[in-house]
Image (cartoon, rainbow, N blue to C red; front, top):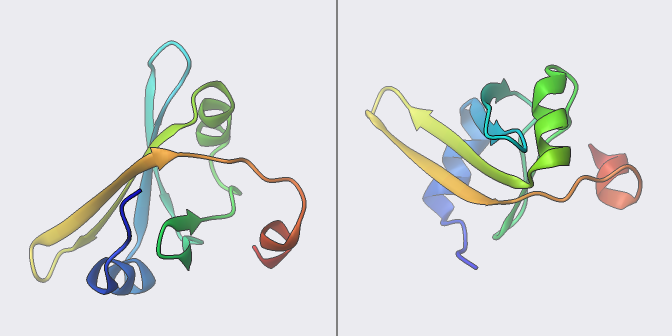
Length: 95
């Protein structure tokens, strides 16, 4: 698994991230996630409290892309992976 560089982590810490998902039948959805949190060098987490389409899509299809952009520099990053939905535990409580 790829590790998040310090540059990528720094951008996630100061910019708004967008989560892109697709339903089980391929209908796309993208939405901003202001609660994005860096757990470690390989893990991002956020609290789903805005758009239930994202959560519904993730229950049908665990694939996700997360994008963050630095508009001033004209650069950005996209992180792709699979999700794990949590409803309890330490990380859930932190979020």
